[in-house]
Image (tube, rainbow, N blue to C red; front, side):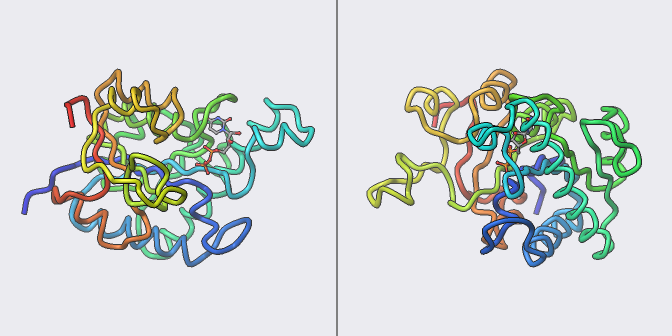
Length: 240
Ligand code: UDP
């Protein structure tokens, strides 16, 4: 079977790293993600990962308890580097070649972001983990995923979540909510559906970068997506 996507941007939120815990990193989750990524590498997919930091620190929430917003955002970005280091370490133990890149320079632990170099890593089959978000406060790691996906010319953004796609309403709150298999960027905006923050979403819509929102906890999903099966919700510029 032919691969539908050759180069993907996998967005993993920090929150999903917590597993059943209230805070921090669950090693079982790291192993699970590493195995999932390994499967993609094994079938010849080039994998870039953007990792969030919400399991450790969020600038906006911290600003409500007194930390100055910009400072809090930088703390949030550093949290993503911690997550990135943890994921890198687990992947390396599993024998996956990785490169950790940070949008904030800290060369002792991560490479600086140099676009051509990042692309070269992908071509060589290394998993590239982008950490520290965009390097700018007032953004999120969704924006980082949208930005880097466009820069490295990824075929698609795979946004792993706890739910299996985009629904007409929040399925965790409204039992009558119905899932979309496909939907257009325009329709998402018109209906005010929440997929990622608006800046990230606009960047994808403007540059025709498709997104699949899928349940990251279902182990066969990523593989199915690669071979073109209908999993989660696909967002494109075409009408749904
Ligand atoms: N952050 C930021 N700029 C970025 C990316 C992240 O300031 O480009 C900060 C922001 O405070 C955010 C935190 O880092 O709350 C963690 O990232 P995010 O909330 O996106 O993590 P996730 O929800 O994916 O776990």
